[in-house]
Length: 290
Image (cartoon, one colour):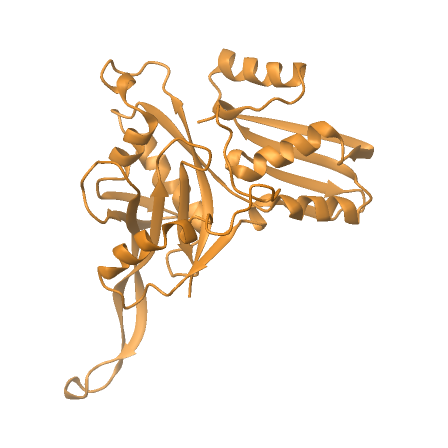
């Protein structure tokens, strides 16, 4: 079986985009950005993004992130059978729905490969894309995580935590009941910040079941924020340890048929096949966000 981690892409327009670039829709830029091969560096090693197909059109984006990895093996008998090593290409399949809709701008990254941790590798690739002079948007990536995992942590500690910290993506701020929401938006607009970090702290305990906290957790779990928390006894919670995953048939040995396989199982890969509209853990995006 192949396991995928789910992530969400948020796009914020650059402060001074070019006239042509300003007309690009977000989905179009995602397709352009991920529609070409790109070399990038991650933790001192060389990686490559390789899309399957270069056509920029409607539909999903499918490709692979590759890196060379040394494999220990033995020489052939005629070469003496001595132990040696060779660098071979290892890859992880990535699928993107670039469209802006309730469950769009969603990315699935194959995990458990030699490529590395999905979110860390993605951040390096997207960092390279964001440096392109023609980029009309700044892309941010956040993991989609299990909302219930925070509720379980908070409940285990009586819903009183020493601190709760949200790292929000600014373009997709939500309605945090009035003035707080307005202030967060104002900070983003006035400073040009792409992220806003909000920390709630008290030695006597922050109420984890307060409406504002619950709204932040529900919103953040959709890939709009990361959340960390510390209990009064020092126990810690990190949302990036609770990333949502999906599973499909193994992709190894499929050859280029894996593109057809991923397309055929697109809803399964992106975690939509068994989503219940009434399920609080269902993946969905703020329709006003980006």
